[in-house]
Image: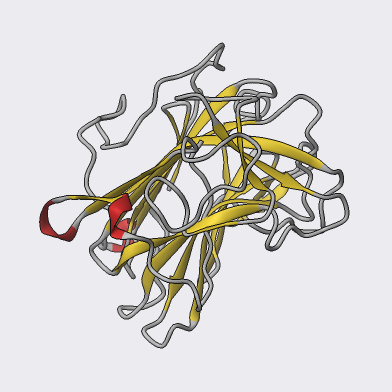
Length: 296
């Protein structure tokens, strides 16, 4: 399992040994959980690991998507998980206007895991910052509670969906996926991938700002009405996996992640629509592809 990433002003850039040389300053990092014995804390700052792996992020042989291990991520009931739940990866270069970013991971959620957050559970996020290192907001991919609705700003409707996207610098909320088709499937590996074209102007408005999100290699959303950077000086600089449980965790529990790839280099794979994506082998029975894709 390849895992989690987080922004702290004091964190150092990860070792260059993680990064494979790519043309024109592009880079690729593949983070796995094969670097230490099962039960030990996931190493930080070296090859095939995180910039910062939180306290309860451990190597585990209980589950594996690829290789022999994954990263087990745990949280204690009644806590927000900061410093214990998940981890972060700081990019080797700042990604500004004109940059693209893909990141993919595989997730195993055990039977009985309670992922209810209040109001939402932080999942895969990208931190954006200013040259003065001020917070410019997160590009947020959330998991919604298993019941209830959210307000979709573009549709101007309450929708019952398993996921949500929101950029804190541009308050447009989009629901993602269909219930029950795209709900988290307990007890099996699933793969999630997100793509950002970074721009201060959305594709719909004549710029390049765009977000695509896949689950199990099927496109859930192609969002073209959103900016992805607050202004021309803003840049994306780190990836966060979990790291904070909104409203505190309802139980003491763990899940597993594996096979994390983060890249600014255009992948050679193409999805069914012809879009570049990292893609992944699938494991076990997977739900059928969605019958509708969120777009704007």
